[in-house]
Length: 314
Image 1 (cartoon, rainbow, N blue to C red):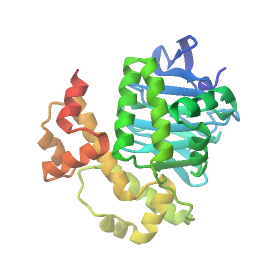
Image 2: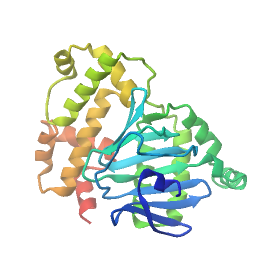
Image 3: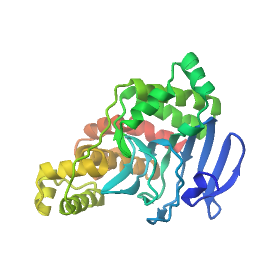
């Protein structure tokens, strides 16, 4: 069993560069082996799945997983009152995944990718070559990721968002040479971009955690609702300050950032899979002004809603 088969999927085909994994005859992800110790994992039309606590029997392989998704929501319970939620508009970092994790997909499909570093497999010659020829230090990248908790997130700047989008396109087209170059550019942008992790070590009581998770579920249940954070907190008998602290500790982002990206994620699904107008989708996501919706969508996806729809229809 190789590293990826530990997640309950089967190796369907593969060679030294490209391995396909799936379940019940359906491919779920493609792993591109870019360098020794560096993989890129492409998810496309990822079927809804769930893994119960303890079902994931993972070994103690050290790794850093950097995720970027363009559609869908992947969430996992990491234990110790921490959760991981990877969604569009966010660069998500996970390292040394605990074996007790429970994973689930919130959408019918997930589009996106992971870039994974395996420190113990990196060859010194490769690291030296990347520094000398590309000014990319994997040691600096890993040192930055070590500053994060087990799971953390950061909001990409415009440059990193552009690189992440291009990398996704090259992965889709399986242009391995360009994927290798873009992954190096991706590492360089992460390391030198002055990005700050969204994380918190705030301790919250079990009661506060339970109430925060209920508010989180209400936020996701109806993305068109115009209830304010203050109203949701009042319904649960929780102060806004406590809620925001607990939310950040649980989900590694602020409630406002979470709601904005969740709405844009759902908008992307509607843009790709429906004939609704952009103005109608704007209303469905709680935006009375389509211009505000368009500006927010571009901030998350790096392109206008119209351009995103045209790209999906190609």
